[in-house]
Amino acid sequence: MQLPVEISYRGVDKSDEIEALVRDKAARLDKFCDHITRCDVVIEHPNHAQHSGNPFRVRIDITVPPGHELVVDERTGKHEMHEPLTKIINDSFKHMERQLKELTERQHQKVKTHDNGGNGLHRSPEQ
Figure 1: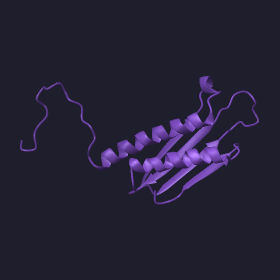
Figure 2: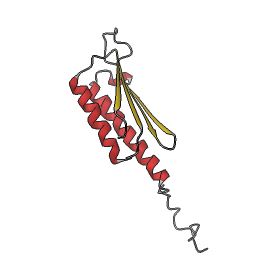
Figure 3: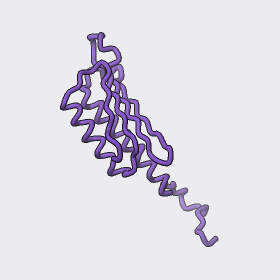
Figure 4: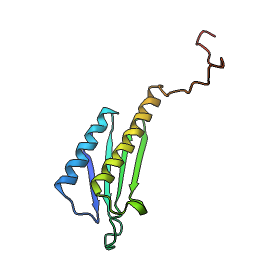
């Protein structure tokens, strides 16, 4: 990555384990797109005064030239209140990897087309 990863914590204590996990996952994003110019990660516990469950939120905001902004906003659902923060972080980065793959495919004009059952509608460039 060209710029360092910016990690913000809101209502969550900063830990070396979480910091290392986020930086490791962010470094992996280079495999999918090597020209990321910005990567901001926000780890939040919106209702940290609430003692039932752990409703974490992880937001990843990435900028890729020439002006694409990709955002993942992952939250624990009602049935997932007790999932650890590390799982939410992993899920967030998986979603971002998918978005980066799709963007790079579009940028390289390699978007997959669906076969329409061989009905002859595909034309070769010579036609």
